[in-house]
Length: 281
Image (cartoon, rainbow, N blue to C red; front, side, top):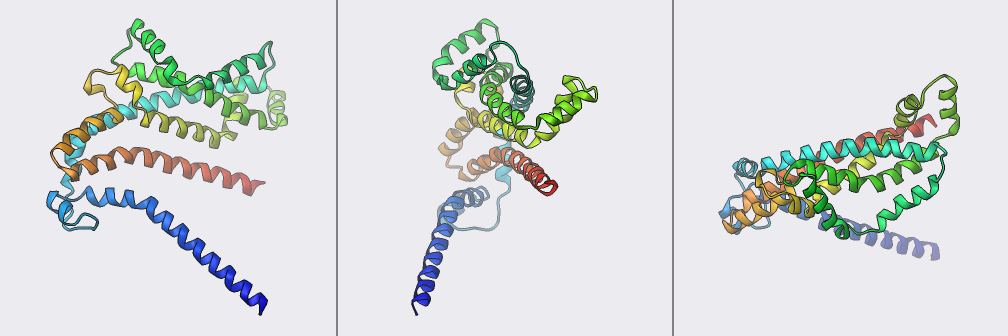
């Protein structure tokens, strides 16, 4: 009887826990659901059926939203692609040197590099702006790429260095014995084993670039060069003032699609790499 009572209590506790988790999932996903259903409503459907799905769907909202923010999405894709490729390439080279080479002052230099993490971005805002101005890079996408590359290096180097150092030394030594140069060791041994962590670094930096608002605001005065963070502000003010909620929410969905697609594809490859490694082990 006592064991039956304990089992009933356990079942009740599990049911309560599952109900709570389901509630949290619904609360987390509902804003996304609301954005999607609102993006295909006209103004009358929005005010008369605020929380529910309505028919017909007004897909023209997406065309109107793309006309308004399509250029901003493309600008952001160009900046993010260029910056992430450079960040990963430079960080991999630096991390490999810190992980596999011995040279005078290596630890001091690495500690000095890590110290940069503790410096808030706001402190370097004005000096970086003045440097970009003196170099004649203001009001161009190049200025954003340069800023993102420099700001994304420290954390990327730290993460990659820790992973490269964990790769068995025997693999690297075997490649060197077979006559591989350091470049070949990096490109044919270390990097193929590091695809999952490279994807992690890439995702981290894409999120940083896609959501950044301060640097585009500071460096770009030409509205044609705005990134999606700046473009959405002007877009929101324009359509909210017109009470055009359908195109407004359609713009939010469009702005999210490239980011969601990149993360989904990257995570699929990331999980595939982890599963492959587990099976081989």
